[in-house]
Amino acid sequence: MRILESKIDEIRTAADIVDIISAYVQLKKRGKNFVGLCPFHSEKTPSFTVSSEKQIYKCFGCGASGNVFNFLMEFKNISFIEAVQEIAEQLGISVKYEKAPLAEQEYEVEELYEINLSAAKFFSDFLLKSNEGEIAREYLKKRNIKPQTQKIFGLGYAPNGWDNFLQFAKSNKINLQKAKLLGLIDTNERGEYYDKFRDRIIFPIFSPNGRVIAFGGRILESKENAAKYLNSPESQVYIKRRSLYGLYHSKEEIRKLDKAILVEGYFDLISLYQNGIKNVVASSGTSLTEEQVQLLSRFTKNIIVLFDADTAGQKASLRSIEILLKYDFDVKVVSLPSGEDPDSFVQNAGKGKFEEMISSAKNFLEYQALQYELAGMFEEPSEQTKAIRELVKTLSFINDELKRNLFIKSIAKKFNLREKLIETELNQILQMQKQKPSTVKQIPSERGVSGNNISFKIISKSNPYEKEMIRLIYSGNEEIVRFILENVDYNDFESHEYRKLASIVVENLNENKISPSVLIEKIEDDNLKDFVIKLLFEDEQISKKWDELSFNGKIEKDTLLYAENVVRGYKIFQIDEKIKLNNKLIEQASDEKDKINLLKKNKELLEAKRILNNKNSS
Image 1 (spheres, helix red, strand yellow):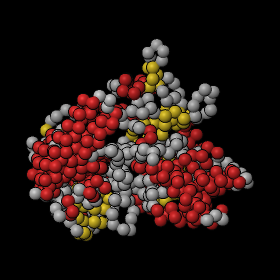
Image 2: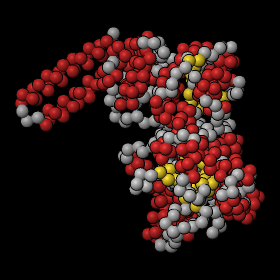
Image 3: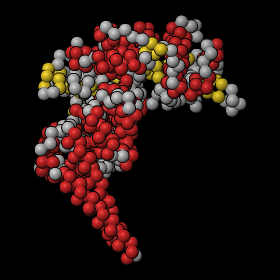
Image 4: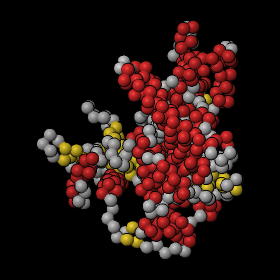
């Protein structure tokens, strides 16, 4: 059953986002918008902004954004349908349903979720109820993992044997090809199915909203040619680099404390959680990725890195620091005693000692310097120079200039160097980084809510007026939207992403569904969705070129006259670029006729530009 699209439109139109959000967040009017403390992360200065005019919200601290449905989905951890139903009930609107099959892709994804859920129950039942699970129960008992904790994290056991889950799947009519896709079963050289997880403790991996997306399996006893851990392959529901183990269980505590502890493994996280340290997430033994950091940034910007004390753990810590700094995290690092990991330490020392260790965490610079010192890099001038340069390079990932300057002072003081010298070294590194293309990635966020506060860079060399036209056609003024789309062919946009965004407006224009809250729901790419929302809240000029042609500030923004000048600026920019290209071709041309033809084209282009400029001055 589905809610009729027309009914969803009715509910969206009737709902006032300010009224709905005000029930959960104290909002104050500031200019034409409303602001308050973000409910999705801890903050003291309001950065959560709600637009009554556009019926959308945006937090400039954690990046959360969307329309009225997105807010309830994220705030209450509910589905889209549940959010629609709740708002309808508040407004006294009766909800009508229609019988309609799921879209093919949507159905496939739901089927994968259902298979994972069935598998999780199968493994859990074997651990908790079966005779075969006794060996796994004893193993977990030795590791001091209590039965209640096992249930909280949905731990399970994959019994020894080649067809236990396979027979379960067959008897429950589970699609075997889909089960293979999820890594639950595999085929041998004869094409026969067999269980992929055998004689292993099973760790279900949950999405941030609590759906089982994958599994990790730990072997009970070391065996030759058997991996210690076996993990699900990537699928439509599981992308490893975008997943953080334990986030579903810990996100509320992370928000509450405004701090996360990052560990490596499943048992590290589970042991800490069991001992009352619940603001913890795990990278699941892999190198921390930008997507994982971006996901975590929705809940806090303060992190303590707590990896194993071995060489691999120390290297992982150093790699993680750079990525975390890129996303404006305040990073501290804890060094565990030799031979310890978070699991063993908290089990042996207890919560109190662990919290003492956390409270003495070093800032990332102190930790990095200590690692170089232990490696003997400060004993020779040449090695010391390398070490200091690496420390300065780390500072280059910090976006906050004031924070960078404070760390410059720390380095200068520690090594008895002039601050100016460190600053010069840093500026050289920053200059080199500017010359490289941006590698910042974006990830789709849970239920359409943004997971970052970093600008989505669409294309660096596109016509600067394209961005402003996208803002205008997503602002909801039908007269402006029609004018722009009638006078500009969006298929000529240099940016593929802008073309995609414009096409969504075109598709909805005939049905008059062009309000911002409606349009952003139509954007399937969450990167683009967040980009548009942020753009709608921006009031900044788009480039130096825009500054030159900004009409001396005489035209009020978001009027038809303003849109006319934006379109004019776009066309003039196109003409200028064609003239530049023709001039290059003239320089390269060896045939005199080609030069003459190009000069004629330039003359025509200049005349077209003159006419456009005259319209601007009239």
